[in-house]
Length: 324
Ligand SMILES: [Ca+2]
Ligand SMILES: [Ca+2]
Image (cartoon, rainbow, N blue to C red; front, side, top):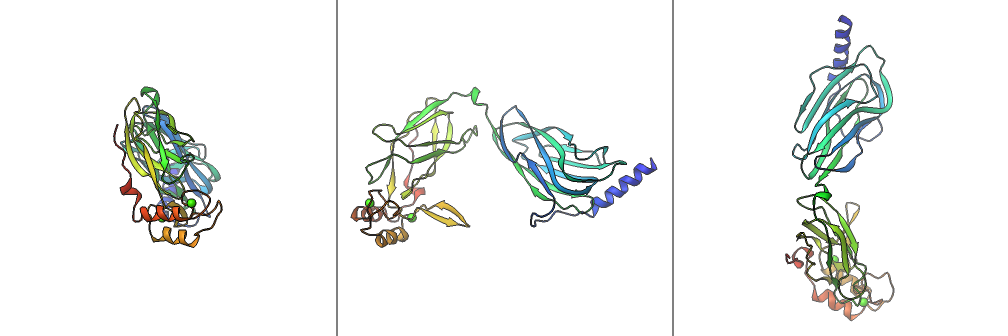
């Protein structure tokens, strides 16, 4: 008993000097939620691991894990196989949205290397997206791990919902073809099903077909080069998936993507930059010219007319779906 108390105190002393993990380069130990990203239906359970990589002589830990209590509940937890002969130092706290565990090994050599510290089994309560964040990770010794959070998406069980085929037509202003427009429906607002993706087909009539869509309200995005794209305009689909109202993407967006913080994002305005590019490439021919905003193979007066006609338009104010 005396030995046990002494070990506990030793372990606690190590924990108390650990402090709050700092953000730093990922050179030392890493504590990650694995898998980092997955989905489950309401009422289902899902187990994630807290996996430690590169631990150094670990004997005890003090961990807090936080998540969205409206979306998930932590049903059960178990020790992984990294440490053994574990005993809790404080009574584990498992309250909605927060799990706090302080444990130490008893009369067991410290462990180095990789392995699972804990397994946490969550239940999906209602549709939504919850991060699973390690908000405290104090270890004994020289461990100050880099923390990697995970997330779980909870959606309605699709077998409990009707589904239908969404059809519609999207045209490209000033272009003879309306094929090849990438269309995406984001996650449904109520059920968190999706995303759904399709590419418009050639020909007349409906050129957009997305099967297996559950009724919900979805943001709709397009990603067509040289056009002003749908920026997530919402549509509400009933159980019969009434067809989309016909839509024409506005042309003239020669500068259709821009780099922001090293990432290419869609440009949502037709402005001086688009005009300048069309003018710079005026009367050139070829496939790779973004100034050829109507994909005719040549930059000419028709491209200039599209830019001029839509000058000042932005994606946010240009598109609205009429609700079926
Ligand atoms: Ca632009
Ligand atoms: Ca053209």
